[in-house]
Image (cartoon, rainbow, N blue to C red; front, side):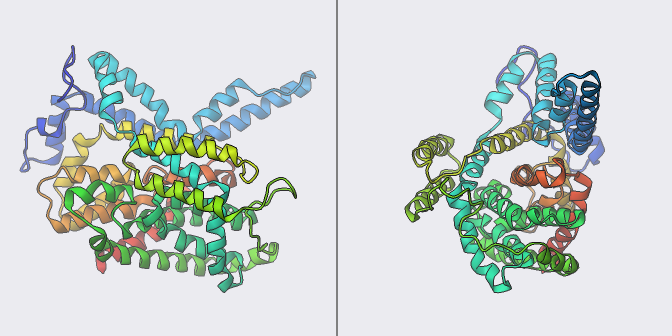
Length: 479
């Protein structure tokens, strides 16, 4: 039941509140909904500003470097010690993509309070918004980045890479084909974390060219987005519809899985062919070390990894995946894991919680804003036939989390089976176009951003993801 407010109804208004006018023009419907609830326009305007902020994040980072450089020059001239500039620090903070939606959530909170009183934002932020997915991503990202899990993944993929003589191209292709498909079993955030860490070690450390860097990042995002569709429980956009539409694992593999696997193979092969000359150059720069331990520390710093420790870490991963919809269980398990990691610190590398927490903050902000966009997304989806729906879902996903798109599709009663397939296919196809298109993308960016001078260009990312997106679209629409 909506919480009664002193100044009006709970926000957002349920979709059932609006008149059902399928015969009316879309613009008339949207205009009517803004008239019935003016805060719809305010919430969407704030959301659009947040999206624009993500595109401008790299500019803030560059400005921060410039301000710090000028401050350092002034300090040297005056003979003062160098200190971090407050202005540069604030600009750098504004340039952190992971904090953008959280910052604009503060603006949204203030706007909602000014519009409808204290009860409106407290009800929406505390009760209406579900933070399970952001919490899950924090936990699975921290687990997947632990030394035993990364080591197990690297040893497994080494068997495949050795078939190609463990060259940079062999490692690159192995990680970008097998890694994303793991997302159907260990969840997409887990697959993204492992794939990004291995790409950092086996590929990005070789300092490839800018075009290949962005092509790889775009390919990774698209492959992970479609790679989670072999099952019905691992990809967020699929989870949103599987129970409502009664889709099981057999259905997913028949309608999505084999097409996704083919798209991943074709896209990876296409980029491998396009950049074959640069891969040959990378192989000459530094021989690939056939290491059994990732990021091997100085001798004596850590003990060799025992098999039992890897098994325990895998068990924590399994528990987290099985309880993904129950935060009390997987957060409790994670707290036990942190204690276990401290007790076995002789074998463990440092568990850095900053990247997972930032990614979780990013996703929480996105969920907050996304929950107020149903008023315009639902009527857009309900007025489209199969192919236009697929294209629209692909495009909308670039500016909204794809799980939000598929969730809203479950609220449209007029969807037949072909329209259901089209909207989910479009949502996963567009999942690599931007950082905000798919929940695991911020995790990949957080791990790999240091190879892009600290800031990933949204335009270059979209260009890098374009070819894999087109290939996935062709697989889902023509076959």
